[in-house]
Amino acid sequence: MEDIFGEPIYTYTSEQAADDGILFDIIQVNPEWAKGLFRYVTMNLMEHGYLTDDEVNIPNLMDLLIQSTIIIRDASNGFKDKPDTFYSGNIEMPSGRQQKVFISMNEYQKYTIMLPEDY
Image (cartoon, rainbow, N blue to C red):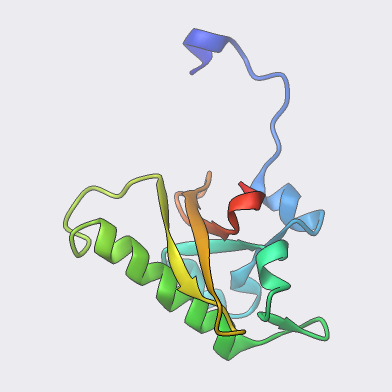
């Protein structure tokens, strides 16, 4: 991209966004999750039942990761197709309500799960 647009003027990393409280780094919960598909969830999404009194609701977070994995699996022909950088689909929130989520690849070649308004 530098060939087209030149050198970037400014970059804002996912790590900086986590430090600023915009993203939640899921490997804080379990370092083993660094081996998986996901690295971050937006705090906006986390506040919809995945955090309780500033504590992570681990069963709900694991459900979010499982539902997001299913979205990617179904869209990638059972993981047979080359991974895409963006997916979207519907999940069931902790409240029981259906919600569209976006799943976007970040600079770690892992995915960030977010609400559409967070994109």
